[in-house]
Length: 301
Image (cartoon, rainbow, N blue to C red; front, side):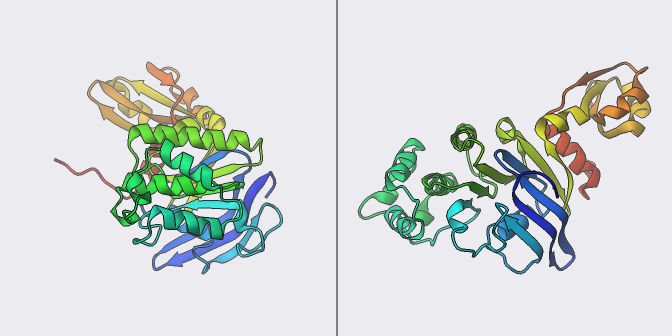
């Protein structure tokens, strides 16, 4: 696999019953924000758990920063930050305990920066009071804010983030995008973010590279600009639906006609049909690709 990657893998696989994560070649490009998009159960969390060292029972090889081959290699964990889903910290821990533990675990942990980020994100300050509220009593959004404060208070080279935007309100999602953007910019090409999401629209403005995962495989990937050039979003009249359908990746009827996504190379096939053509969003592209491979069927209502 050629290119500049912070993580590369060959023949990476993990099987759970009938499900199998199977990546013949995989690489996270260095110096940008990469989004891993897929519906629930596509294998996103499984992959992130393997990359972050939470899961070790996989087949294949992993290389980090072109020099480390094992997540336990000395110095590697100091380069990587991780945020996860669910109950990330021990439920009874308070903010002060989490802060003190982070100081012990990570030599690059900046306590002042941690507290400044916590205040900036309007984190529930009761977890730092005496007596302090345990982190299990925080809202889902505040639990994510606490993780963000911890991970951005370190001097890392790679952030691996599992569904970081999912529990956040729109304002905080925008703040998260800005934090990722600043983190990468400050790294001057040496910092990378790899995050998963099932709704890319929340994070599209910070996504430099996108991977779309279905049933444990990467079915599409590329830099955002290139992917948007590869596809077109189209709209047309209802009477032309059947003429366009064979050439479209995904096409749906709307109240005033139809809309969908088509490969740019197939536009020539429908040039004589009266349609409107637009640059698609990453959301439109990912939904079209996932719909084509999903088992979900819209029921009659």
